[in-house]
Amino acid sequence: MLFDRRFPKLSLSFLVLLAITSGAVVYWVSPLRDPSFQPGTNAGSLIPWVQSVSEETWVIKASLLAALFATNITFITWQWTSARVTQMMSPSQRVGRISPVLALYYARLLGTWICMFIGFDALFIGYLLYQWMID
Image (cartoon, rainbow, N blue to C red; front, top):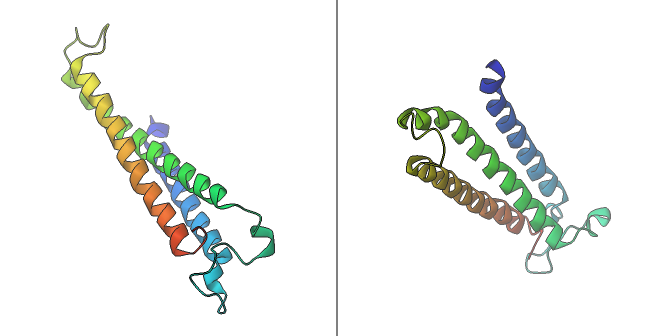
C-alpha cells in the first residue's frame, strides 16, 4: 500500500526531471547560444556532433516525451479515481460486462490522455521551434 502512494509521485518527479534535462540539452545545443546566429536561416544546431540529428528525430523525441507525460498523468488520475468509480457501481454491475458507468469512466480517461498528449506535444514542439532546433 505504501508503494501505491509513492509510485505516482516518484514517476511524475522522474518525468519532470527528464523534461528539465531534455530542455537543458536543447538549450545547450541551440543555435541561439551563438551570437553570430541569424534567426531566419536554416534551423538546427551549430555543434558538429548534433548536426547529424535530423528534425524528424527531434520531433519524434518530443512526441515520445509528451506521450510519457500524458500516460503518467492518466495513470495517476486512474489510480486516484478508480476506487470512487467502483464504489458508485452496484454489486451486480461489478461482475460481468462493462457497465455504462465504467465505460464513461474509461472514455474520460482516454479523453484525458488525448488532451494531455496534444497539450504537451504542442508545448515541447513549441520549445524546439523557439530554440530554432526545427523549422
